[in-house]
Image (cartoon, rainbow, N blue to C red; front, top):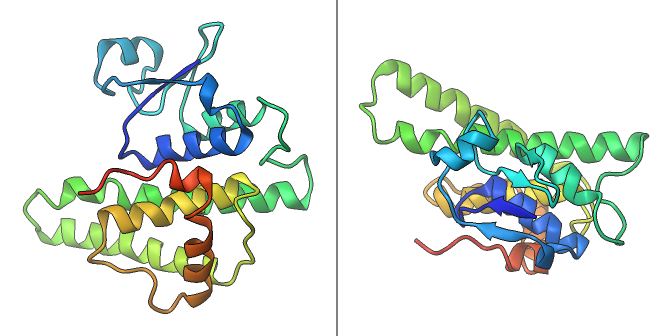
Length: 197
């Protein structure tokens, strides 16, 4: 098995953190190839990272699908519970974490462009999404990366620290801050920390 790898991608980090949690990370090869590569495009028409290739050559994308596949491997308890309230909570938390990433990752490109009124409005809308998501997470009771939701949220908060330190998320979120400081030291997060700078 192999996964397209970018050490700065929060979506790849989510997949790798899950693989560590499931105890299958040693079975996955890091495929250091750019999303724009013809090899990736041949497997994934969206040319996105992560693209995952199974042992039988099947290409999977993008991160929610890759995570569901990884969750099916190994002997550890799954992080995506079976149908029922726990499953819906885990998947909703994962959607909230992915939503933070979807609202922040594209903004890095916007910063390099002239800040006209339309672009300023777009950035404000995305910042509003993140602020509301953080407020919602402050009300949650979160465990020690036991579900895909918790893993995704932790990766999203880590991405805010990594790319947006000038927009601190901790003020006003003491419960979420305490949770994050606890889980960031656990192997799935500690071993997938993005490079400094």
